[in-house]
Image (tube, rainbow, N blue to C red; front, side, top):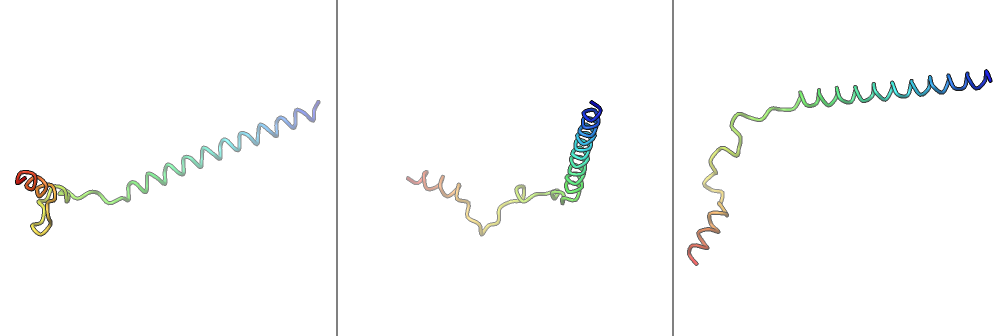
Length: 71
C-alpha cells in the first residue's frame, strides 16, 4: 500500500512540474511577442494612401469610366 502512495506522490509531483513548465513557457512566449510588437516600426504620419497619385501612373478606374462614357 505504501508503494502506491509513493507512486501517486511522484506522479502528482511530475504533473505539477509539467503544468508549471508549460505556464512558464506560455508566459515567456507572450513576453517575446510583446517585445516584438514594441520593436515594430510605427506607421508614418502621412501614409502613401493619403498622398496624391503620381501623374505618370495610370488610373485604371478613371480610364474604365471614361471608356464606358465614350461608348
